[in-house]
Structure formats: C-alpha cells, structure tokens
Image (cartoon, rainbow over all chains, first blue to last red; front, side):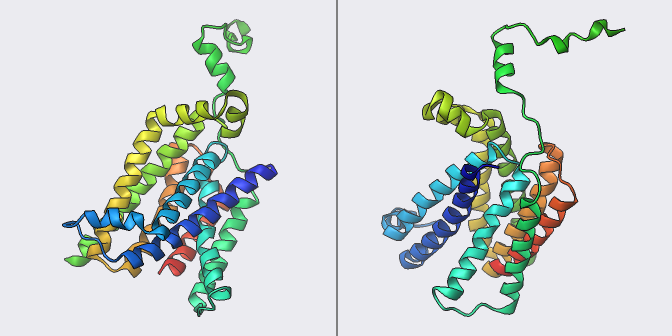
Length: 152
Length: 126
C-alpha cells in the first residue's frame, strides 16, 4: 500500500459522504418528484446542491473504480461505509445535532470492521499479468515454464 | 401484503447491487492497475479500456437497476427500514459473491469485518 492508494481510498470515503449529503439536501429543496411529472427531475438537476452532489458522486465513482483496479472488492467496500461514520461525526461536531447511543454503537462497529480489513492484504487474487496476456495475443512464444511436458 | 412487497423490493435491490459491484470489480481487474496504465499509456487508454469492457457496461446496468428499484421500494416501504436493510445486506451479499465469483480470499478477518460493517450500517442508516 502506497500513500497514493490511501489517498484514493480517502477519496472513496469523502466523495461518497459529501456527494450523498449534498444530493439529499438539494432534493429536499427541490421537493418530491412523481413518475407522472418527470420534468421535475430536470428542474432538480438545476438546483446547485443537486448539481454539486452529482459532480461529487462522479468523483466517488472514479475513485471507487480506481481502487477496484488494484484492490479486492471486500477490501474497498468497508472504506465506502466509513462515509456513514463521517456523516454522523459531522452531524455531532459541526451541526451540533444529537447522536443517539445506538448511532454511536453503529460508528464503533463500522470503525472496528474497517480496522479488521485494513490490517490485512489489499489484494488476495492474482490477476493475469497484462504483459504476458498481450504477448500471447500477439502470437509471441509462450514462456518456457509452460512447456513442462518433458519432465518425466 | 405490503411487507412482502417491501422485503421483495429489498431483495431485488441487494441482488442487483451485488451483481453490479461484482461485475465492476471484475471489469477493473481486467483493465488492470489504473495508475500504472495511466502512466504508461495515458488517460484515454484507461478510459477507453474501461468503457469498452462488457463487464463494466453490465455492471452499470445492474447498478442503475438497483438504484431505480430503491426508488420504487421507498415508495412502498418505510425509508427507515428499506435504506438500512438494503445497505447492510449488500455488504453481506458482497462478501459471499466476492468469495464465489471473484475468488477473493475472504478469511475470518474479512467475514468479521463484513458483519461488523453490516450491523453498523444498519444502526447508522436507520
């Protein structure tokens, strides 16, 4: 794990949490949208909070797919859940809202779960070597260790 | 009867969301380490390889399906049940799916993490 990879995981957490909260704030301003009046959806996108939320969620998606390119799904997913913890902490210490004991327990459980995963390896599968794969496609000779038929 | 619809909706959301995550994870493993690829071949190679990957496309379809099922389920059931139940069960479902379909080594450490996170999300998202 390099510093850059931790930065990508931090991006996954931060963009998910900030994008979700901006989107939900904007949608509450925009009001309910019914299936009969889909034009409400277009008006909602013009709301600056909704627009900012969409941009942040696109950034989340970019960092999420980036992380999945070098880490296991079961390694990246707990990082997305840290966003819930972040939102609850913001609610408590920035917005001075009341956070119930059950929610504190939730924060503790998620943090514990993330700690468990972060202590282990990021990647446990072995993706095929892209250089060998492309060499095979181009008709290059296969590596010598493949020709092990004459061992007996 | 309404409860059956609500839980049916939750199951559909979870299954679609797990399928989406697994396909996306598989697609990105096929694309390869994005950072290395970006440095050696440039950003457009990364974007091109990603969007041309069939698993990526199918994963997006599954995620969009999951998102719209969530919207429908929210109109049938309580937000305080649907949102945490779907989010939390997706973590458990993903641990199983990652082990079976992606051949990730989901050891005891990761099982404990999946259940802790699922319980925590259920408490927080409610």
